[in-house]
Length: 240
Figure 1 (spheres, rainbow, N blue to C red):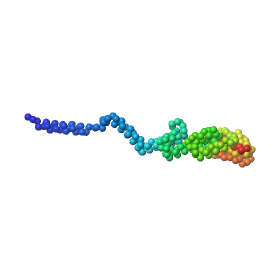
Figure 2: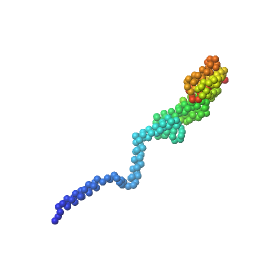
Figure 3: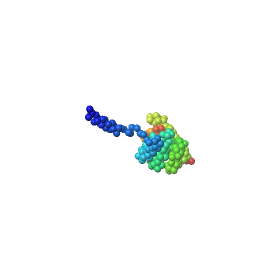
Figure 4: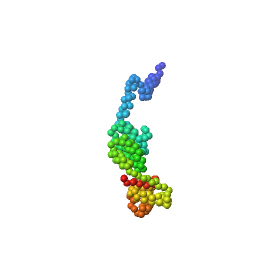
């Protein structure tokens, strides 16, 4: 006798197996038609990513940020490969008209001019010249560099005497420093020189000036006061 349930059971089993086959995850195994077709598709995908405007802007933004951080940290042209100049130069190689990178290069040149002026103030003339040469390698036509070279040339012709002052003696306002300042004041008066007082505070600078002036009977000494960690007096002698 034929079992009436068996055909129904077999029909259901076939349908179940067919359903499982239809839901198989075909993405788990990639089978290209040929190996050559697969290789050809890889460069095309990479190229499209590099040319993506969003990706390009992200790369530029990261490069500009690193270059600016190097500038703020005074890593202007060193160490090699980790400085502001190399960073902005890399951006310009990627995007020659990038205004932020061009401005960054200009800022580096101006920072070297500032450092050169600081070197001039302490009579480090060779160091100042080297700093200006670095600035010129970045932006040779900058008017600020030309002006700084003129300042350097002028001060090289100036005869100057520098008197370093004892910081502890100044703090105590002792007799020894007062005598020394009096002698400097007389030297300035007799030489008809000008001077620059470098003091740690404005009050200290004014005391130095008043002590020198008292020593010359109130004679009007011509000079200025600047703030510096190392007290000193720079006496600029008139040109002969």
